[in-house]
Image 1 (cartoon, rainbow, N blue to C red):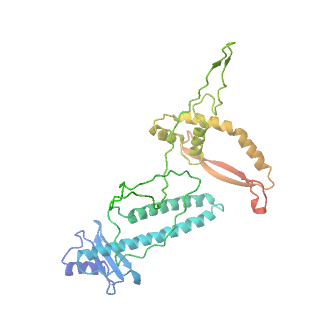
Image 2 (cartoon, rainbow, N blue to C red):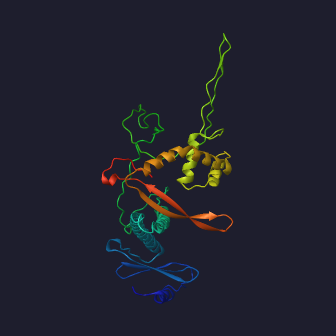
Image 3 (cartoon, helix red, strand yellow):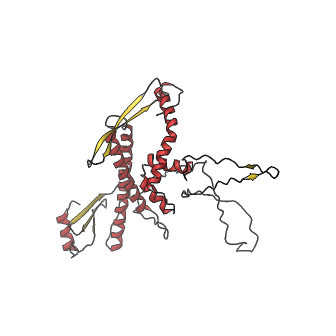
Length: 339
């Protein structure tokens, strides 16, 4: 079938006695059933979709609305398969760029990786939305259904995660047929990965004052030390704030908004004070790490330009981030790597 817009429009007008501007979708197939075309008007102009089916996925379209709908469904499934191929191509491209990430122009490659990963994420979300099975009706198997995708086995859930067992017993207390007592024959088990949102807890430190009944001597345990002097944050909360800021790139004002949804008001200035005092607290550890890295026989350095805001100028200036790494494991060294 080699007809284009003009030929297909003429068939609609002469054979079906309808207008291509009616908003309907008109389906055409080739004589051998391996080519299908869709013609419709989207409000701006005529649109045409052309698809050539493999021999094992031919769709026979007869007269009638039901057959036309089956053809449209088949085309949509083929579009899903085409998206799958594009996803696999993007995955290969992302893997290739990751191998190039530490070469020349690594900053440009990193930006390309981020854009491709966003595009890949959008395609995977759309695929999951279209292919999600209906909870009310099981998917029907038809002759026009494409072949199943290869089965991808799921990775087992990590063993170190805690398990909570929920036992689902039958509603019947006794046999519904004879009324006999039920006994356990076996069981079927399946696992679901769940996430329990992090929550705040208040740890109350109580130091009882003890006195001697004979000499009136008063004893009391010393107050536990705090990571931030006179601060309310425990070490776990400080570690969470630092990880969210420097590893997850979550600014402090956004963290403040997240904590406010849980009913805990932590101002940005308070979080900034905690970050600064935590940095001062970790300074000896950073210095020890610096001495260890600089004492290595082989040292790798990387210079990364970073745009930095220049207050008052209305634009940014170029800052430089120098990173030093010692890692001689490829040469057989047993020294621990560090950066």
